[in-house]
Amino acid sequence: MSGNLQEWLRAHADELDQTQGLAAGVIPRLAADGLFGIGVPQELGGSGGDIRDAIKAVAGIAEYSLTAAFVFWGQRTFIEYLLHSPNHGLAERLTAALVRGERAGATGLSNAMKFLSGLESLQIIATPNEKGWQLDGSLAWVTNLRKEGFIAAAAVASSADAPPAIISFDSAYSGVQRSDDLDLMALRSSNTAAVRLQNVGISEADVIHADARQYLPAVRPCFLGLQCGMSIGLARASLQAALTLSAATRNQLTTRIEELQRLLEETAAQLLEGVHDGRFKAKAAPLFRIRIQLAEIVQQAVFLELQASGGRAYLQDGDKSFARRWREAAFVPIVTPSLTQLQIELQKQAAAQVA
Image (cartoon, rainbow, N blue to C red; front, side, top):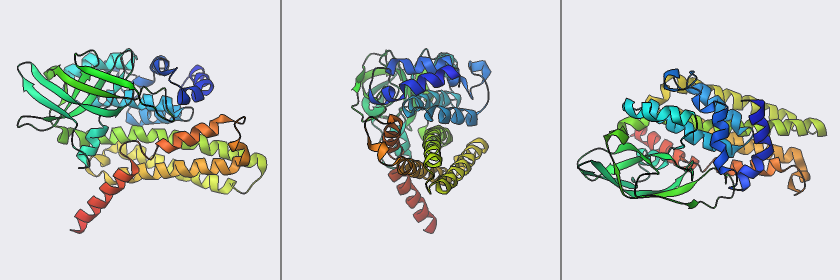
């Protein structure tokens, strides 16, 4: 990350969090730094490396702004969907423009991840026609739906005798309707909205994978790994702030802060290793536990920062970074898959093993 981007994020983190005024500028800023190309093959317009490099980049942004990291996650995860797609024509058509930030990519697969765990039915129906399929339905919460235009991924249920599929659709397609931005208490410049599809036509060229049940387990480690980067970066920022405050006030928190820092880095290393070697594709439970542990570390980190700050953290004219991180931390447990959903899935897997 360049110094210019660091300064921009530091200067505008609160505005990104609390207003929608900078929503149009996040993608161009991140793209100008080459961040979307990290972990993307050079032949597709990227800078090379692998998914671990992308996770580290998300974490780096999250140290400054979870809003910017959330947008980064959405864009980079959509690119990852294309990298795992057997539809090489689609990947060749879209990836370079997404890497350059000329197009916005929205994951739209939160509903699909819940569906994979048996927690929710698919919200979009695909009806075959002479040109491909007609899409009807809606997605209630999607990030990076830029008002200037976007491409989104979604899981669709077939009205015919076919498995659920993963498809993409463009905001320019007739029948795609974006809602106003959701009235979030934080992360307000993330272009988070609902989208409704009514008589939207797509073709084979828009299909990411014809079988969602086969595709989703393979891409889920990248989806969750990049998402975990947000927790890692936020926890690092909060713990560093807490450590600085603790040293200045000579309180008794330093040992606890340093212990949590060590646990954070150990957990981050386990995440990177497992995503890289592919173990999470066959066994998702360890990845779920890492996601839960990182979320718990975030909550402990912001609480330690609060304790290190004392009453100053509660003053409106004080450093607003803590208040922003407190709001950002409230988002970590609920972003799909939420901690509750992951815990339910782990309980189901444990019960199945006993049976």
